[in-house]
Each structure stands twice: as structure tokens, then as C-alpha cells.
Length: 377
Image (cartoon, rainbow, N blue to C red):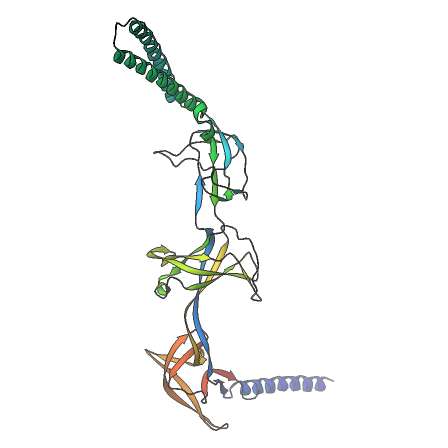
């Protein structure tokens, strides 16, 4: 029994040894080198770039109050359409104590002057009736009284404006009413009832009551790398795609390229703007209707250059050597192929295919990258 066990163990070891030897022998055999082969094709090529940016209105206006105070009422909300001059909110005035004191002092002084002018006029009127003074002196006295009365009315109005933000004479144009300065859609109302607001002055920009924009006039704003900006021309067509809107695109026309670069992540980039056509193009090429919103992230595809009906091959078949380009033209027989290294002149490349201007005909075949395969496969 022991004799048979030893023979079985020896047989197993022999089989393992033989299998290992066969495996290593197969791995050591030379491998056949196979190449991809390409036939030149006639087709159109275009080189394009994609610019990342966002959609925004061409003109967005921040509406601010004419006086400082507290918001007492908001009549509109974001998304509403407003006409120029339409009231958005109302403000209750909190008067400045210095201005209030000055206005009250002006009213008191105007009242004193008016009372004195009325007294003088009454005296001059009695003298004029008795023909003791000339008509010229009488008219001057009456004119002085009229001026004093007008000054008193002006002082009263000024006090009302400082105290209440509105006077009887300008009630229709009250500065307590915050009105839209343009016609458009309200994009945002960043204040609430009860918020304190201040008007724009020399020391601050003032509180924004609402942002209003014409959403029928939109632009794409983005940045392009300095290596590609030299190929841009104002008026170039662009295709805008928006990540939030699936299977639709918008046509656009480049209208601005910044003359100055800005540094972003260590690279120099130039700002571009393009006018966007609001009517979208669906995936099947038909026109549709869709509402664009301010701030959408978008990508703009710009065709930098293009050629039509040119001879092309895959760019992977090109060998670059300095400023020269070469291809390997296939010759010989099917059993024994030869590869002739040939200088060619290339043109536009779209990253996949490249234009061949000179050195190759459509009837020839070229060698591509090699494919390594086992000979025994």
C-alpha cells in the first residue's frame, strides 16, 4: 500500500513539474506584432472648444430707496413682471435728528419773517391809501410779503419731507414709494418687511430693495484660455447647452472678447460674452419654447476652424518628429507586409482625425498603432 502511495505522489509531482515547464515555454515564445491598418477617408473636419460659463441678463438693475427708513410693505415678489415706475415696496421714514432740527428751525424762522412782512405790508397799505407813499414802494412791500409766504410754504414742505418722506405738494412722487426704474422681471427681493434700509450716498451704495432685469435679452458669459482666444472673431456662432435642461441647446453669437486677461488657477483667461437666442433647439433639430433663468450654468461650444471634403486619417497613425510628420505606408503582400516611412504634410486636427494635405493618396493604406497578440492565440 505504501508503495502505491509513493508512486501516486511521484506522478502528481511529475505532472506539476511538466505543466510548469510547458507554461513557461509558451510564455517565452516570441509574440507576433500586429498593427491596425487604416484607409484614408474624405470627410469634413472641425476644431472646436468648449467654454464654461453661465447665463445672465444683459442689463440687471438694483433698485434702491431714495430715503433711509424701514420697509413697511412689499407689493411684489421675485418672478413678477414690473413696468418702469411701478411701486415695489413702501418705506417708513426714520428722520435724521440733525436734519429734522434744521427743518423745524427753518419753519420757525420763516413764520417770523412772514409775520413781520405781513405787518409791514399792512402799514404800507394804510399809507398808500392816504397817498403818503408811492405805488412803487407799496408794490415792493407786497412782493416782500409774497416771498415770505412762499418761503414759509417751502419750509413746511421741507419739514414734512424730512419727517414723513412726503409732502402735500409732491405726494404723487413720494420718496417713500420704491419704484422700479426699468421694465422687466424681478429676479430677487433681498429685504423683508421690518428691515432697515438706507439710501445711496457718498459713503455707501445703499440697500438693494429688488433686482430687476429684462429676461428677453440674455447673454452667455464665460472665460476662454489664452491659447485659443486668438482664433476668436466677433460674430462667430456658438452652441449653448445648459446642464439643467436636457436635450436642448441655444444658438448664440459672440459679441465681446475682453482685451485684458485675468489669472485663474494659474492660467491666463479672457472673458467672452455672447448674445443668446431665447428659442431653444431640441435634440431632433426642431424649435421649442422654454423659459431661461438667470444664473444657469452653461457650456458654449465654439467652432474655431473647419475644412470640408479633405483627405483624413486617424491621428494615432501619425508619427511626430520635431516639426515633421510621418506615416508608414503598407506595401508588400498579405503574407509579408512592408512598411514605408513617408513624410506627409498635415493640416487641421479635431483630436481624432487629422487632415493630410500632401504625401498620401486615398488608395493607399497606412499602419496604425501596434496590437500585441500571442502567436498561439
